[in-house]
Length: 307
Image (cartoon, rainbow, N blue to C red; front, side):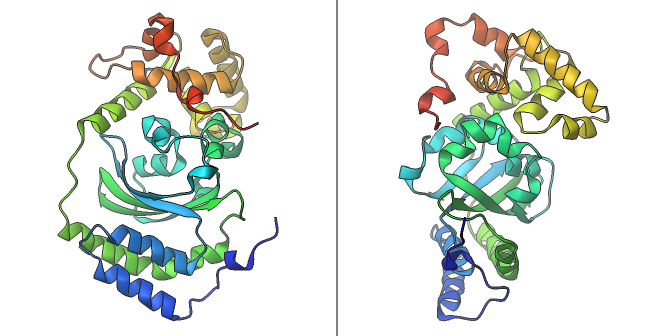
């Protein structure tokens, strides 16, 4: 894909009128709800951005969206689809859970090796019209972080090394501003619905297919739906690729499925049936025993998939 001139970032940032105005606006809005817009506008002056937003990550509840700018005509899934459970498979969110420090994280650098061939990518990521994303993650605490993200549409080229250089130039000012903004604004109250959704997601991750699979098979399963190849899964679990392939075959056989598409669908569909208050209850078992009408609506039914 030929790169549009507007999508080329300079390796140094000239102190233009637009850049000075954007920096001034970010400073002026510290402590107000307009600060998030100002930060996105600043990022848009140093590199081309098609969409973006801000959310707060939490360990004990689902992410809380603050702001999201996007073109709804380019998205085949509703805005809230991400918060219904797929966020748990997002490489950016997984990096946060792993305890990464504050910094800039490019999807290209943090995604598993099979991410762009995974069911998560096909069913969710590709349906929201994106080709690439970069996250500025600022740690609030060990259990929460502010995530400011910028995205490129599938209509345009992906981010380049020069974009990361430009972002790193303004990063110290953005993070200093984030610290002051957080200090001046009261922490957002936790929402019961967010907390419950996250607990259901975590319960599904911990207990999905526990009535049918061994603990090792369930570890392999989570790597599968997260976009890890057999080779990288073997590396993460300190075993051989051949052993992982055997585990994968056993997972398919025990769950009576024939593809990763079916596995991904089954995992997502089980989230509403998880019971966090009942330790070790397999949500798959609850899902399979539910009336057919209760199992009809799923993430995959919300919108048609692109061919």
